[in-house]
Image (cartoon, rainbow, N blue to C red; front, side, top):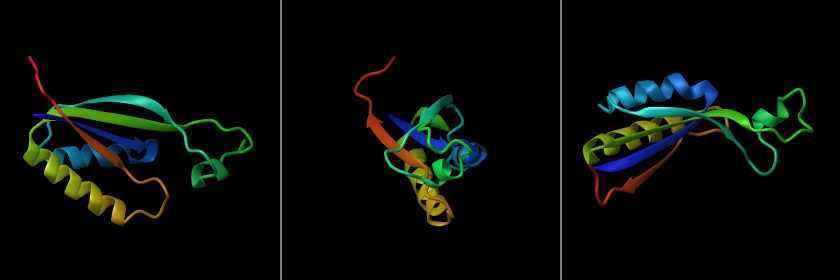
Length: 101
């Protein structure tokens, strides 16, 4: 069992939910977060108040799941990111779990 964490800008939240389902990750949690980048981004440039360096509304999803589900999810994320037209790819990390109850 491992912990997988995925971050995405708000506009991709529904896409991430679909990817989790396709990867057979049925149990997960999510949290709204503010994402920041140093330097300019497409989202900051389109902001009415672009001189202010506010965060981008983002989401973080996480799940304790098995290796085969994580492998499937990573393949789906790679495919999703390859077809993006923005500079805001989905990001994912895996953390091994030594003990759990």
